[in-house]
Length: 276
Picture 1 (cartoon, rainbow, N blue to C red):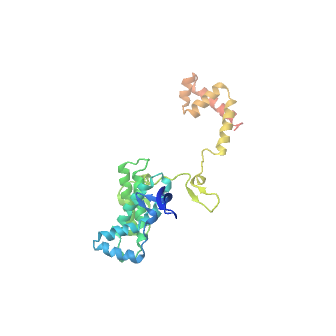
Picture 2: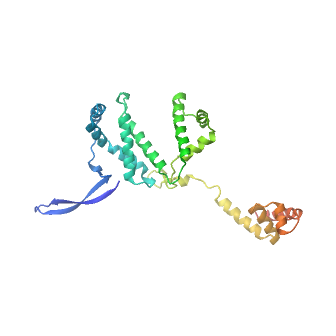
Picture 3: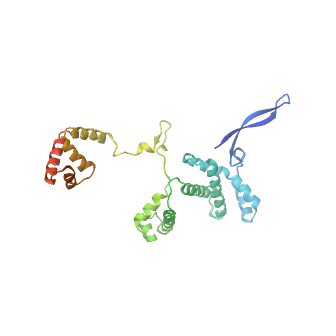
């Protein structure tokens, strides 16, 4: 929400006009504190009028469901997007839900509209993501989602990636790459659990197999072991294992035979094992 403190002129008990500050929560020029709340009966009546082409009923229904959009966009507050933009995109999702809603299905409008609003916002976030994804990759991903929905209806279960790839007649790896490309990025500081005490964040659930205490100690011991080698042995170990040279290349660089490089390398490694 965007909150402004606005001045409002009122009259005090002495009938004098004074200015006071009042809270006003406003998004896209809409004062959200004054949005109406429609009952189910009112919604049904308005929908009947909407289906008959009543534009005023349509506008009234949209305004009466803007609180639904507000509740949805709160889920996306941590994405760094301006709340006005999210609200406008959410309203597009709301309008699409109104245009496609079927009263005969006996489903609450909010149950139908919320996924539509969320989907519209997610599409907007994907298209405006700072991590740019090629148009062809996006097209493949959207076709994969359509194929997934088609197969889900056909098989009455979620299809596997291989089944989606077979349906689209493309390699399985292409489907995986495309679907991964349109996934929304998640902040490492996003809370995944909160019981009223300290929150658990995504970063707490991610392990670092490379930079851990064991590898840190191992690096120290390797450096210590290398420091105990002769200058020529250190050069051979550096060229072979840190710069990726072959024994032949090392031999040419330091001016000895490959057999000598092999012998010195084995001796150096044997010496280092005492300290690692």
